[in-house]
Length: 179
Image 1 (cartoon, rainbow, N blue to C red):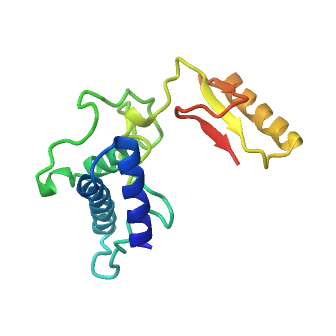
Image 2: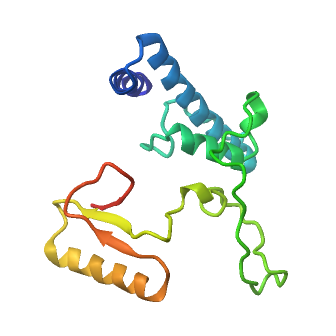
Image 3: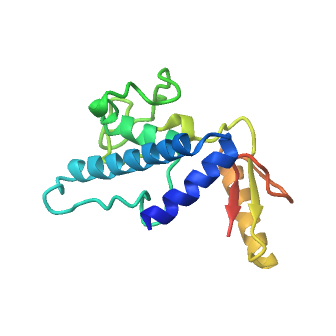
């Protein structure tokens, strides 16, 4: 599995970035190394390093390939970016958490830190609320299901500041694709 994925990603690297074989292979190995570091850091955080050995197959969560930016953000969140000499790998060091409303558990105006890693700390990965979030439907989605999804997104827009925009084509930028 690792070799198959590595060979395919190296081919894509060569074509996409127009780099030589060695550079493409190095880029893929760096991605794989970061994915393995994330797995180890998550196991360490859960105190499972003695019971579980992470699989070095290049994927995260069975079939998810992480981008370099995603890997860097997760490693920073886990405090493991510096473990091999990497500086802060995040795209913007100035991102700060917005003030959150008080909760029952904490009346100081901020929420207590959760053990979750991905959602609240990666502000660079959130949608810009000033523009609608583009979305598309896969051909497998029946028209009545598309109507249900459109109604649900309209309800979310009605009760929040989040807006959505259906696209009839698949854009080359980030978007939601309902399958």
